[in-house]
Length: 186
Image (cartoon, rainbow, N blue to C red; front, side):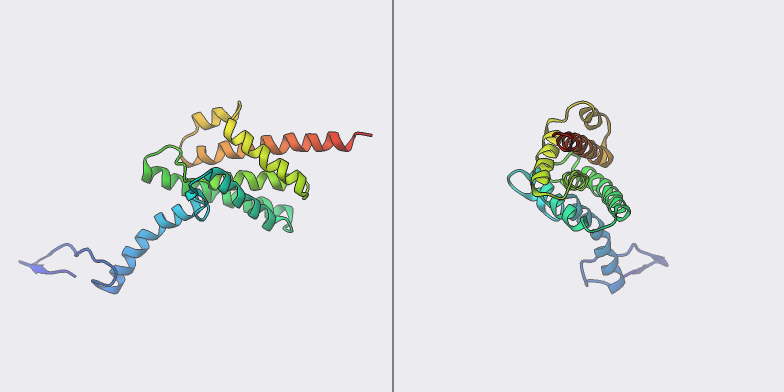
């Protein structure tokens, strides 16, 4: 509310949920919504809060994403992954700016994205998916060249997402080559 003081209106009071006009309380709660949504998405709906191996927990969410996209058309799958990448950049950038940490351990949407992309490149078979999961985690953790360069040179949410995208491509391509070799054996 505004109070009149000598003909000049004072700045509005800060309010907490319902302590002032409903539209002001709503505006304040909506102001808190994007940061909470960013944290929810960046942690892959809480997987990043796991006390042990949060990256692996985030990658397990990626298995669920890949499973959900298995019946989808290739174009829909690519669109879904492009959207997940964009959301990951936004959410992880937000958490980076709020925490002041370059790559917060709770941010695992990149592992979710990377594991899902890796699995979507492979035949739908438990053995191939287990190999894909392990190969992705290997490339994500070890970060060999050129993945390491992306990790070191690209900052913010884009860097967080790009090194895992590169790890997914490396793992997927390696396993597709292995699959091709196996299929050509007598």
